[in-house]
Image 1 (cartoon, one colour):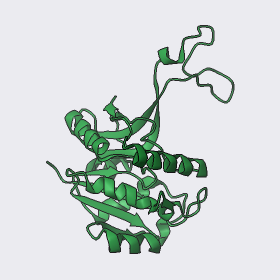
Image 2: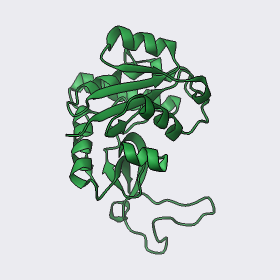
Image 3: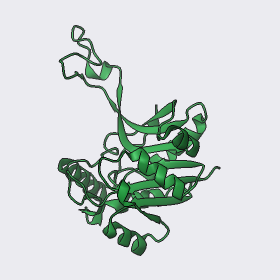
Length: 233
């Protein structure tokens, strides 16, 4: 199998949830969840964390010495820098045939899901030249001008009968090195959508998301039940 490396960018500062990447979540720093998930995926040959956070750097070196830590250069630390620029920098530092990119803000992502995504990607490659995680929605959506996006208001179908629409959930991306270098983009021209259950795809952007993730993690520890298994679209 070609060499697959995981890239996990982690900023020190966060505007909407201060210090979220290293803030304790159900008793553990947030970033540790995704690291443990990736370490449990045998198809991944290396894990690279790109960060400007001295707290995260120290924690990784103390508790996850098998993880490669890249200190993010000053010109890439602004929160407005496109993610593709950061990935290009990381790919130049750590060459690989393929990359899987995820975030520390996806603490509920499971190793089984990551493995299924990797298998789906290689099963469909090169017909599909990249993959990204999505969440299925079957609800009535409208644009800012009050126009229906995915339904006919004159034909009131049940929401479960509406054609599904998919949200890019930022949980994971898989792409070849050549696509990233040639397009300067983690998405190729023919990406494969990979569906992830909503509970597992919680992405922490706001304080409410942090609380939801913590409740789900604590409930899972109590009940022993995890999110349902995903499937590819």
